[in-house]
Image (tube, rainbow over all chains, first blue to last red):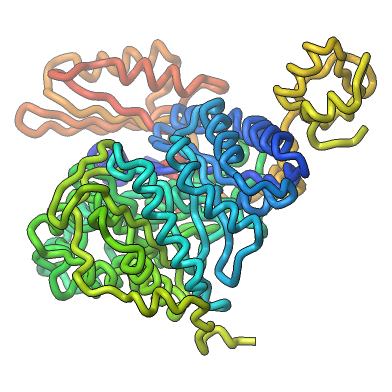
Length: 454
Length: 167
């Protein structure tokens, strides 16, 4: 027999009972050739190129799902940072680009499109500034467009002027989408050391080093890792835990490699990367917090949580690296608070504070993700939270991100349900002390010693 | 005229009665509308009305189509096309029902194993499928067997197992 019963049942169980899936197939499309001195023409080209290249994406993903029996949940598109595409138009209002992206996403049948993006870690071009100013309206007016900005890198340091501006953009976006619990901020993220081939929204965009078009795949499977650890039991040593996670990540990544190769072949494009990230959903069991608790902390946020998360992230990367030569993107473990039932429970019972979350982001693969704070949080405090996270990324040479949602009218401890994949937020307390002086100083935090490597 | 895109603005600027474009040029929907309302014909080089060209995915894509099939794959398990698993309540005729459907679909059962525990069973069949068979229709037909209170059938392509369990 070519496969043993055990192997076969293991795979079927992963898909049927443990919510293993291909979380996203993301087509990256370069839009630099859409630049035009005329704003209207530039938007026309943006719409046309996305539709021209993305038209078959959903059909191809569905055909692979049908042909292999592997669920492919999301189909998405990532485009060149719009601040680069829009520069030639000289326009101060870049919302028309967001409308063009949104319309194209509707036309090709996808739920999110990433790339309303600017790189400002060292400074602003005139178009970058226009893009920042356009973000609140763009996110309020469109449903599918996601925006991301780069505020810091290990090489450049942290642009604190950009951090302050971004904090204001976050508050304004929340205000404009107040009726929906500030949902615009769920489509808005800032980065230190952004990844140019990240297939996961909201940070997905098509970096300038990328080819004309590329197919990236994001695989997920917190449920699979959780079940494997549950079977391992609490007596096993941490080496056994790491080995179990590594083996499971290997298998998950292999499925991503298969789908990535096949999707690229069927679309007629190049295969970029497999991002093996444990990305939780609000579904019961599909939780990174559950994994941490199985590794051995009472509740996520208890002492030991950061150590457990470090083990998890590292083992996922190692398993992934053995399974595919194309592992990239963010690869590791995501900790989006509102999207993970285990995290929501931990916040609700007071186990997981904002400070502990920040500590966890030093070892997870992204950062403060889907964190809700009171709607009246000051711009200085939001800027401070972001600056802390950027500093972690800058000094440690890793990607960190902040997706923070000041929910209008909500106080610490209040609940808000966005529904669907975004889940339920419990508003967290950012504390009563602020950082007004730091916020007002402006300027740039210089690049750290680690950056001097030439 | 070699252009990546032909926009409405281009159409207004170039005017009619005919605009001849390069075969690779993509005409925006707005340009098509503008041309239609102004009575301007858009023709591809070498004659004929404009039809959208196949997407040019770039130089890397062309190379990838050549190199992707050359990437090493886990060794092929001879004669396996699909793996069928069934789980549910045991009763006489379950195996017959599934294999009869497989026979109707011209699938050759290469290996089979079945266990029963108390009133339940699970079954694994590996099957060869005829050349050129449509996986989706095989899968859909088999997965319609059984029911909520009876048994459930799942069908997956052998390549998934090969990638996951073989290197």
